[in-house]
Amino acid sequence: MSKFLLITDLDNTLVGDSLATEGLNRSLMAQRQQFYLVYATGRSYLSARHLQQQAQLLEPDYWITSVGSEIYYRGEVDPQWAQHLCQDWDREAVAAIAQQLPFLLRQPDSEQNRWKVSFRLEERAGIGSLERLERRLQQARLNAQIIFSSGRDVDLLPKQGNKGQAATYLRQYLGVPPEDTLVCGDSGNDISLFQQPARGVIVGNAQPELLQWYYQDNRPWHYLAKSPYAGGIIEALYHFNFLDFANFPS
Image (tube, rainbow, N blue to C red; front, side, top):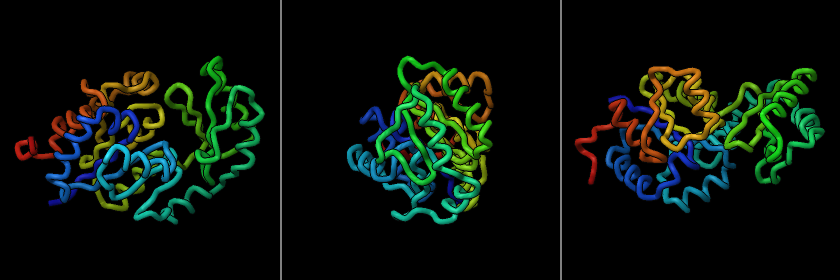
C-alpha cells in the first residue's frame, strides 16, 4: 500500500488546541506507517523544535522551516534545496531596499537566514505599503518575493522558494502523487501550499488573508473546515478518506 503525504503548518494549525492536537496525534500514531509527515512552518528550525517539545508533537519525516527557505532531514539542511535557492539571489541588495522603508521593522537575528529577510509591518501601515516595497524590488530587478501573513509578518525570499515550492520538491522526491497529498494551513504564508497541486484544508480559525485568497480562487480539492486548529485537520482526513477512522483509537 502506497503512503500518503501530510504537510501541516504548526502555529494555529496543528498547534492551538491541545486536546485536538493530542487526539490527532493518537489517531495518526495508530496508522503511522501509512503516511509521510512534514511540518511546514514560518519558524526557524530551532524554534520549531522547541515548539515540538512544548506541544508534544510527533516526530516528522521532514521539516520545512523559515517559510520554506530551509528543508531539514534528520537535523541537516537539504543541500540541493539550498543550492536551488542560491540561484540569482542577492540577499544584501534585497535587505538594503527593505531597510530604506520606515514602515518595515527588522525582526531579530534568530528569524533571519541566508535565504530569508524578515520584517514586521508597522501597525499604522496598510497593505499599500507592501505594494510600494514590491515596486522597489521590481525596479531593482531583484529575484525576490514578498510573503505577508498574520497581518504583520513580512518575509522576503527568492521567488523559487516558499512553503509550497518546498512541499512540491519533497512530494516529487518521495514519489507521492498530488491526489495523495494533504496540505494544512491557516495564514498568508500558507497560500503557496494551496497553490501547489495537492488536496488542502484551511482550518476553521484561518486568518483573513488566507480566507480572502480562498474565496477568490476556490478549488474543489480544497476543504474549508468548520473546526479550528487540529480539529480541522481531523475533519479533512475524514473528508478526503485519507485514514481509516473505523480503526481510530477513542
